[in-house]
Length: 161
Image (cartoon, rainbow, N blue to C red; front, side, top):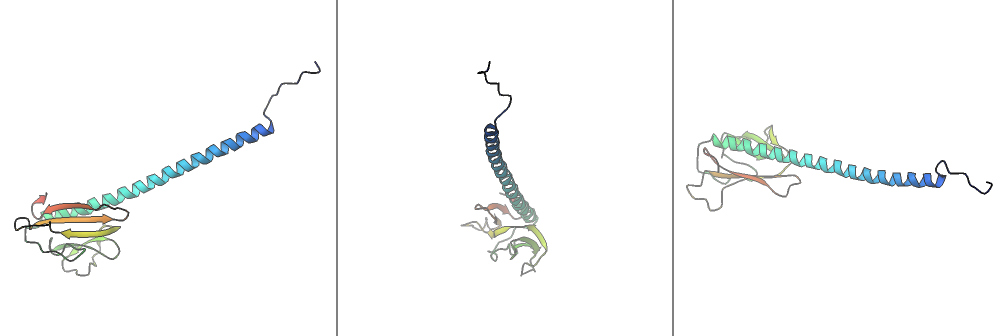
């Protein structure tokens, strides 16, 4: 029995090093996948928050518009609603915030912020509006990191269209 080799009871050092290297590669790949998933979740949460803010702001302006008597509308100063919802006015300040203030506040210095991270805000009359359509306002908000503005049309004193 001198020629018979004893059976191996464990792993060799080379086999152990190969197993550890494969395990490290698998863990590194899993770490990358988990990291990407967490980044996507954070970006989605931030996007949802911005959309929530914009919808809140538009709904607040719609509610105000419903309480205003219908009147002929003139094109307001850029970034404001002018006197459309008098005595309330909405405007975009220099800090990318949509502010609810009074029509007497010509500098948009009010402190009631109804949306942050706003790239653009406009209040427009519909194209080709006639005398019957005059009390209809179109309000649009464009948020940071959003290529598409959220907008709504509202009839003063009459609700949404």
